[in-house]
Length: 201
Ligand code: GRF
Image (tube, rainbow, N blue to C red; front, side, top):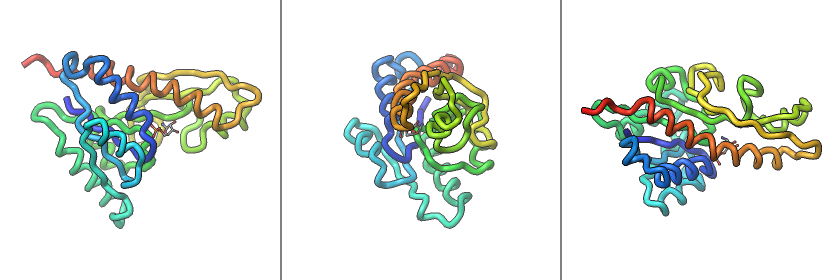
């Protein structure tokens, strides 16, 4: 199974996933590998790291497309270049800051995952840590979910909770949540791969 990871920036979740794939022997155990790291931004820092670590990278610059649909169509064409016969790619959004069209989501239904930095269904959307602190929450966290047409609302695969401390700034809370993201995303993907392992030919 080819795994394609989509990023827009640092790519710390992508790094955690790539490291887990190697450390936990995903190729041997699930016949799965990280086939490509794709970004909508040519300057995404995660691209340099991916290249240095021998991962194939692609850029589909959203600024080059007049409409959301045209961008998604170009992105899908690149992703489908990593399909294997009988085994569609697993598409992993990791810090990917684009809203995907319903047509794109439909095309990858059931094999399109995302990680969101809140305990969904609470706090969908942006600036979650700032909003959590403003709401006076005592716990925060992250959610791995399947992507559906409704933003940040698909079936939940994994969650992790962290405490919100009285003096927390959004940055401090973000760092605490991010470290849990790096633990639960690889875990959720490994479970997905185990569940969807190709039936032995
Ligand atoms: C972080 O805010 C993370 O919580 C969310 O996307 C942002 C960047 O993540 N998932 P990454 O370092 O690019 O993986």
